[in-house]
Amino acid sequence: MLDSTLRPLIDPPLNALARALFKRGISANMVTAIGFAFALCAFAALGFSSYGIALIFILLSRLMDGLDGPLARQTEATDIGGFFDIVCDFIFYSGVVFFFAVGRPEVALASAFLIFSFMGTASSFLAYAIIASKRDINHERQGKKSFFYVSGIAEGTETILVLILFCLLPDYFNIIAIIYGVLCWLTTFGRVRQAVHDFG
Image (cartoon, rainbow, N blue to C red; front, side, top):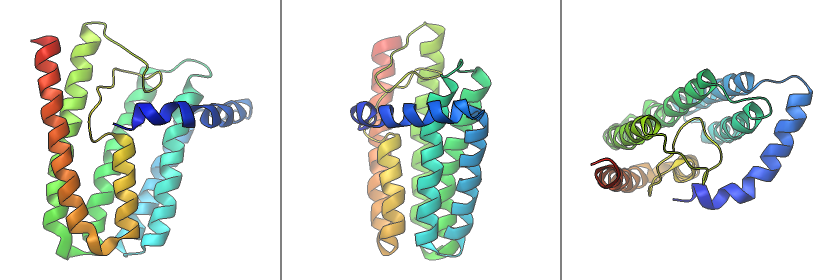
């Protein structure tokens, strides 16, 4: 929901930083790998309930995720780069939730519900993208991407904000997770409706 609104604000600084990295020989895949390494550090911190440290690594990981796309476009975005990016993203999102529960087993049920809800948003997102690609449908409202991005209530920006809230308000994990899980299902149902309209 917020992704397309934020793009005009975050794209200029990300593009400038990407150009600087490109001049120094840093590739998009290297940035994706660094971002994933930061994600693994966040997982470890969450497992030990070190939420301040986890938050730092979550933010660093998402910065790298924001940079790899603009950096790839300094030359030409590749299919394998897009593949690695989306795989790392989905592991990151579900991993933060899972490892929060590792550190606090009492939130395991709410954690499982949210990961279950992520499956709805992830599958509807990717299924729509596959069919849109077959029909040569594309747009750049959320920046030039490797494939079509269908919008919804719970997108990347909202998910990152929720993960930040988990670190800032760990005692409220259950409430936040359940509320956001419901929003994920509303997003999934919205995408199904959109797919029926567009592809039915």
